[in-house]
Image (cartoon, rainbow, N blue to C red; front, side):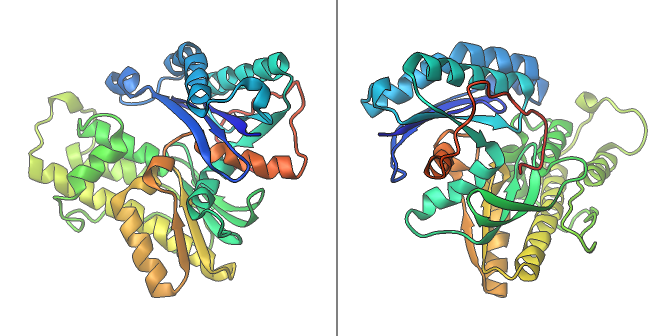
Length: 341
């Protein structure tokens, strides 16, 4: 009997039906990129309203693909933390309602733990644990020492902006479109990563924290200098755009890779697992691959289709079911950008 999983932590409405062996029997996802594009970022109120409109059709689509009836489900898993309050609420209310209507138990899924579990989904029967886990996305840049899928020790993370947020802000300043990560990455391929000596904040600090706010500010000054500026009126040639993107991306990648390698060495594990939307960035994947080869550790990066928010990674719910960890009927959301314990 399979598990139905629901994901609405930010701006993706997703549902999946996954059996006990991790096979995906049905999966559906509705993106909101076009709704937020003109704002160059996710607007929480718009996101939550879009989830209300899409949640039931997405769930119905996943179930239809699976060919199963609700009575055949084992449980209903839903991401309840961390994320946008309104977005989380839509998914949790839908899951609780269906759990009552179908008489099924609830499983509360931690969104960040699930991002790392996407690596386990790709590895199939081979266990990825113990490992160092790096979750890098629009809202998170966090490192964990994971001894199991549900046993994670927080090592450190961003003290200000997440890497993905910095990508979006740089893309907005350069008017490259939304979402910013893929746009910056495309432009970076034709640029010189050494054109601008952008800062690598906290790179050599004896901790596992990140800071990308100063880097974002440095890019802003490189584009337009100090003072108030109307970015829409700036004329930036393509070569400059490419060099700015390449130099910015190189700074982000260097910080992420260096801290991850340090965590692998100090925690004495031989595997690094990486998940989250920014994990789809080609430059980051290449740099991590090179670092793994140089320092002789195994590397597991979630496949691109499981990097961005999705419900398939909610298969981690099976790990909780095996432990008998079910959520109470009055499950509540835990919004924000928590570390994800």
